[in-house]
Length: 181
Image 1 (cartoon, one colour):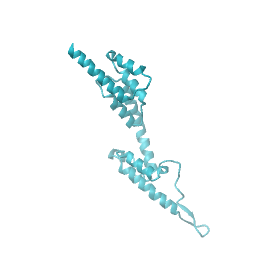
Image 2 (cartoon, helix red, strand yellow):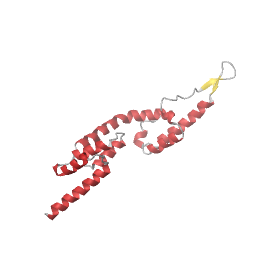
Image 3 (cartoon, one colour):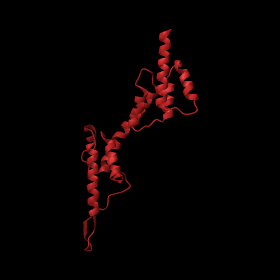
């Protein structure tokens, strides 16, 4: 979904999250009428259906053309979301595995580590601060042993931006020392 966060904000803002889950089934379409044995249209169902279709419209309007083909003919927000989850779950799993493999095989010349962590986050796989630092340090060569020792021996845990700044400063110092020799 192109604007998934906007749709999610609208869904929660209007209190319609139950439309996307099995928690709140729709009210019955018809209810007993005033005359015994008759059924009449349930006004609660009409209200529910109107909100559901509006939510479905928000979801559909946020989809790319490639995603729209997976939901052609579906009308309820729950059905649309379910079809999207079914169609893209295996792809997301494959992407998570692909990105994790890239992180494990990280070399200094490849994609920036932050880019890989961001990619993992974009497919729903959040990597903790400590795990990110572990991967960053694991990808460093012997020249960076002083950095690894400094980061791993500190009592107060480092944050990724601090480790990145420290690494840049250390690399700058190495370059300065090499150039002056």
